[in-house]
Amino acid sequence: MTKNNSPEIKKSGILLEKTQLGFENEGVFNPGSYQDGETIHLLYRAVSEGNYSTVGYCRLSDPLTIAERAETPVYRPSHPSEAHGVEDPRVVKIDGIYYMAYVAYDGINAAGSLAVSTDLKHFSRAGFLTPRITMHDFRELAEKYGAIPKGYYYNVMIPADPEQRKSRLLWDKDVIFFPRKINGRLAFLHRVFPGIQVVYCDTPEDLTDAFWEDYFGNFRSHIVLESKHSFERQYIGGGCVPVETPEGWLLIYHGVEQSRAGKVYHAAAALLDINDPTREIARLSVPLFSPEKEWEVTGCVNNVVFPTGTAQIGDQLYIYYGAGDSKIGVASLSLSGLMKALLKNKSIKSCQVSQDQQSIF
Image (cartoon, rainbow, N blue to C red; front, top):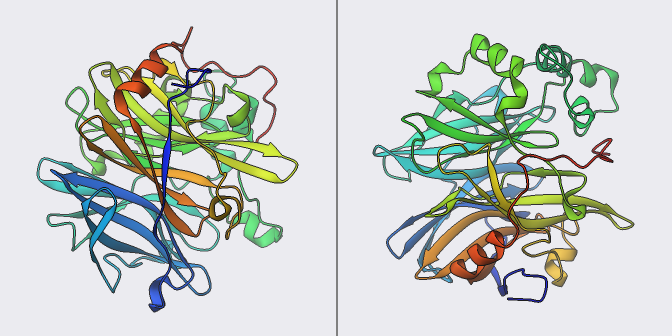
């Protein structure tokens, strides 16, 4: 444990990087993980020339050893919403079905989507997980019962082209299922800038227009985390599938700050109530780890560590992350040490927003 009560982190270096194969010759990063005993499956974002993404696959025999790596994508775009790619998969297994949440990107809009599988090798698209609404409609619905924090009035990556602005929908990314049902219902995190929210449903088919109208009409009640500390002042977003512990759900997420060199992405940690993830139990006041290696500081996007997958062997928690939007790195730490650090940073109240947060830009 360091003097600021943050746990000791070991970075083991680069696990995966691009190859000469056409589907991943520009970069590989942001892997989702699924652990079966000591076997770890990684489904990662594979980028080809022109920034088109598919989902690649590899199997690890232990947290740092590659046993198998597929030479073709395990999942490809299959819908107009995916015209520019499928990105950032996260995987869980519930009731014998693998749920892979991912981002569908058409070159203008990004939407949380779902694919399902029974074997982790063959996935079929199951539709959208996030709403297809404009920013204007979101604001009207979210303000139905009172004002929301000003940061939610902004969207990300507003196109310069006026025609593209007309077709811009609410960006809703970082969709991550909890690894089991909560109170008998499927639950997933998602991210409407600049915070993290939670959705409950009996089946994905419940996510209709009427569902979202009611959801956004009560938007505040669904907020899990918002920016609190300086290293996450710009915005935060989901990272890894939540890890169930006796003390609550351990959430490894990302926080973004604006520096003179531009945006800096950090890995962060919080603890959420096991039955009500909107109740924040604790949150580290400093990053779990930050860009420092040359391949984290310099990449397709500079200054990025983006945690997206975990594996646990004994007390060691391994975190797989995108580095510089180019490579996949691995960091590890003591899970018990992390829990001790978190519990020394118990939250006074959940979802407290910094008073000086005015905009995500």
